[in-house]
Length: 271
DNA sequence: AGTCGCCTGGTA
DNA sequence: TACCAGGCGACT
Image (cartoon, rainbow, N blue to C red):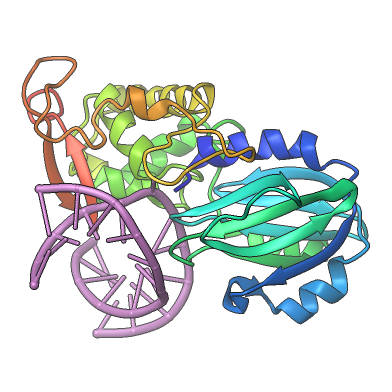
């Protein structure tokens, strides 16, 4: 599911909901999704208090006492729900962390691509996060962005979605940012002019901000920590709009494949 | 740089 | 029946 705006929405909610809660237990029916193992995670986190919640790229980071961090990656269909232990469980529930005050943190994941990962200590945290490129709202500056584009002939959309180059952009927001900037998704990154690069840089921030404002895109399985839908799906510019009219020129939005992913763009506006 | 695998389910 | 799906790591 989730790209930067969706994970950010969950993070902001969980930061409030989880602060100060104590972990009583963790259980799973899909041990493959618990790293390094259920046994190790259990041994380390039971009895620990939750200190805070952060996000790096599309990875959620739940900070515990004793320099422990529980990383959660939702991949395509993961959900993280904060619920009362009396509420009915989801059909695709994969793991549960029971908390103080009769609360639970529930990890649902239809396709089982996501995972929970125990990270011990600062060194391990650093090595876990070192693969990620700059954050759009923190340290992604235009000088870096411009240089990144001139450094490769890969299709610009592939570059935008490369987490080692820029963090947090996935398929939905890549498509929409490219539309806003009027850049063709298949265009080699190093063929993009400085002016267009600036436009694209601004568009990335614009679509991610919109995503956060609408609390994410609930197109398929994404729901926030309380099980509520976001509404960015009502504001898609190109994503999933193949055959529909371009909001700028009225031409038909086209769908192609790029890097194996569905790619949507206006063939008239995006050159 | 491009393709495949991981999984399950919805839809044409 | 075939193809599609907010991701990403391991392969060529």
